[in-house]
Amino acid sequence: MKLFCCTRASVAPIIGLFLPLGLRLTVSPAADLSFFVLAVYAATGRAQAIQALGMSWLLTMINPGLAPLAPLGSVSRYAVFMGAFLAVFIRSGILYGQLKVSKIVLSTLGLGIFLIIHSLFISPMPDVSILKAVSWVLVTATLFSAWAGLAVGEKEKLFRQLYFGLVAIMLISVPLFVLPLGYLRNGSGFQGILNHPQAFGPTMAILGAVAASQLFAEKRPSWQNLGVFGVSLVFILASEARTAGLALIIGLCLAIASVPVLSGQRVRAVLPGLRSRRVWGIAGVVLCFGVIFAPQIGDKVGNYISKSGRAGSVESIAEAYDKSRGGLVDRLVANIKENPVTGIGFGIGSELELMVVERDPVFGLPVSASVEKGVLPLVIVEELGIPGALLVFAWLFWILRRAALSGVTGVALISTALLINMGESTFFSPGGLGMLILIGVCWAGSGRRLADVRH
Image 1 (cartoon, rainbow, N blue to C red):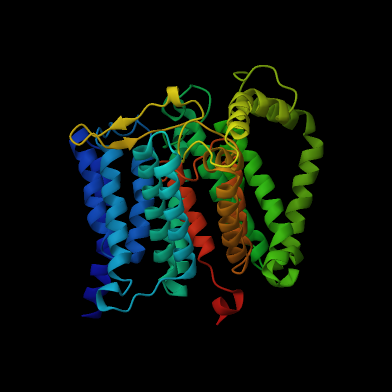
Image 2: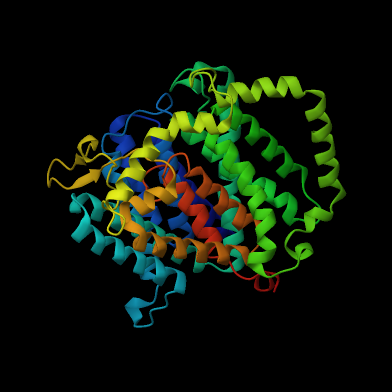
């Protein structure tokens, strides 16, 4: 009986996760069906809900050269959201009159209510803003509730599974490094098995942040984490995703510097790897190679900053950023000056007339309204006004504080994820790259004190 239970438990994820992936890789009708199969799996448990949301991100972001288009993908992914929500709702105890909701979930729901009320009174497109607010709070509260509801051992096991899932994406992408399929989007930036270099680069940055932070979180850092970090750096450079590279490096430095302060723990308790000879030995070797091959590295970095020359002649990262995002920032600042208190509306484009809203053909409900924005802090102020932005910033700081209580990895992950949003704001967009970011941020924000984890 025990053997049968273990076998059944191991078969369920294979059917629930890899069957949708297989369907997604076949023909368009099956690609649409894959999301609904995934939604059923999501409803079966907390861990399954997180796994399904992670797989929905992959099904949405997969390289179009590997899988057909999913015509109903923008609609059917909401079925996965609902399946995951049902999983945590049923297990919340509300059906038995014993509702248990953590403070982080309550605060997220409160923030969501504010976003909806703000959308009703301020947004020029209330239905679009409400859709974005509801989908974001639904996914974020679900993820926080699911992570918080897992036992410490289950949580660590699931996080390792998701980590190795990203490692698998990295390894499967290796053969595409020498094939045109790996550069399908623009012929220059490497996108691996994902649909855009600007998705692949940030994905590798998040993976690299976890791997590198573990080097400092362990007394004896593993060569495996070092290898993953090294390959992720190579792929970030190949993707030409400049914001991702900066986010990884700056995010790691900020995490190492801030986690002892935020957690209230001693440096040796939260960063035991700093005393490792292996870490300092590796740092010394890297420094030596950096000095010896400085000219070659300089050329590679220059090529990376200019996106193989496609970004024009640039002399610095600041200049490259200004050329890439300067126009978007100017529009953000102009809108903030015009609407400093109320904002322009949640999820609304800086130029309303340029917004393209995709609506359901049956009910006419908005299902997608993508906007291109960068610099997340400015986006929040532009859309919600200064008072609303202060509320969001306080919520984010609380999450960062909670992450610090469980170690450097959570802070590194959140810091990197938020810095990625300095190039393209995706934090409030769970339909794309934002889903991966939210899964990581919610894991980190649901963390427990180090003492609790050890016991």
